[in-house]
Length: 526
Image 1 (cartoon, rainbow, N blue to C red):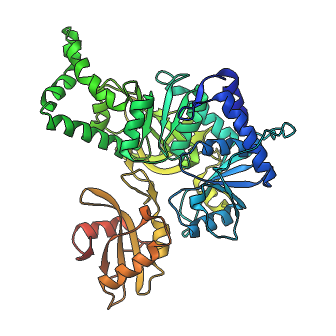
Image 2: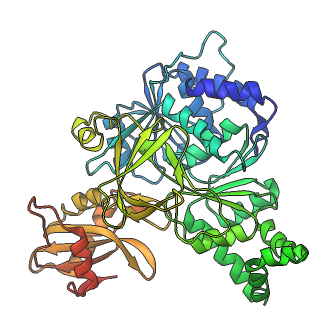
């Protein structure tokens, strides 16, 4: 099965169910719009085998264009809306993309590809244009897992990978049903937002409320208007919501009693005092529209106390783990009345996990195999040989352990990838290569660090004698113009001493960070 056929199946099962809820578009109406968009793209010159970029916020035209591209037998290149023209040019050149469907606000002058206005209205359906019979092994999407100025890795995902991810999300069937409404403010270009917002929604015949902004006012207004049943978000958002709710109740002098009732709700219910529990829960649930039943977190770790707070409101809370290389959620936790440590549960259907090279505490490297695991990075045989074994197992590089209940827990990050509070990934290799271009910089280490309780990308620069903080700050600012703002290094330290290196002349990031914490780099800019 290919992705267009997956959509056809959904249309056949639930033709009158709403798919795009805000726009009041049913599944049957949506597929007609897909066919019209396919005709428009075909007239513009897109054909089978082409690579087509999609660069857009969460507009209805985003999923519309995805399925139209697949209708034509072409491949979608997912493009992050936070990058720069330099990065888009480089990515499209690497991927072989000659056509980008984008919002007009993203248009710029380039000779690398042609822009197509994704908001442009389509004409009539071309009934002579039939859906291309893509094989399940054909590439459906491409995504970059690291920036274009470092050593980029491109992840091709097949139609089989995507449809099998959708099928594996059947594991959420106790909490997600046909006709439910999914709230979609996670960016669809990101694998987490795409897997939950598009794949899961279509698999269940559910509706999707797309929100192109992250403005809290618009989001809360949407909760009140559309009353979603399922809400995915990064852990930082769930923490902010929790803190806001608690702070408001404290300001009203209600939190002490409310927290007592929530903590002791089982006892109160056993005593026949469920009324008091509901009286506390209901106004808090109304913040999310009153019908929410499942919250999903992914992209970073969720604090147990945050997860437990939402469980105390009677909401199911699921944490997912995944990578671009696995179409996002390949492990999903099960809701629990009280979780003591961050967990991502176990593998979804038709996927396997293996923990190798365990230490005395059972912590080892997580390997994955299954229907969702990609087949290898694009044109990168050297790296592919490093991350796959002869039996098809993929080395994530993440350190995990498994508890007595069979749930996986993180013990460390994948290599030195920086995961910001927003859930966005920042890749040190890219930034280090960029900042090494600054005159007077001899070496640099970029790593994850806490500044004022906020996770940041921190840089320690080995510089030539005479380099000042002011001069380096100016050089960093100039280089930052070449990349998305969330990647910027604005907190850094300077040293003229050699950074600790391995025998193969690679910076020992963990020792550099330890030196920073120990105060060995006193010349700091924070």
